[in-house]
Image: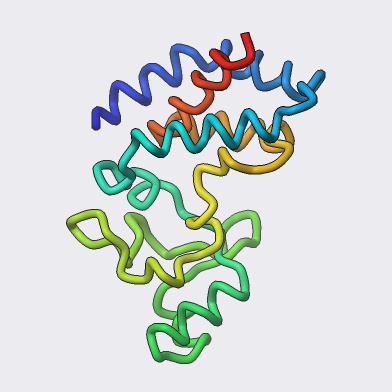
Length: 161
């Protein structure tokens, strides 16, 4: 997967993608959730996240309390130990990993804590959300990081022409 080419294409088409997503927000088609879900499923039939894992290398997920509980139980350590060893509070006051790439990412792009990974990781790149237009700012960010998100927005443009 050519991540530089993805990033370059995302930058090059950012205005076009922004305009498209804003149009969805202004006047969402009646069956938008269905179309978005369908596009998401089509993209992920083609894209193998294990060939990329750029999100795990570059995007620090927000960690919520339930994530801390679940992951620390899985690792058999106390939540306070987990927080001290792996987490920090960012400038927005959110809990995030102390450093990237993710401390649980193996060299083969698999995840040591996959079964209990943070909610933000499970939902990334958020292209199967209901009312997708509510997270346009996030979608634009994700397009630059995730080849599947870029593919998804282009598939959405195709479907809604």
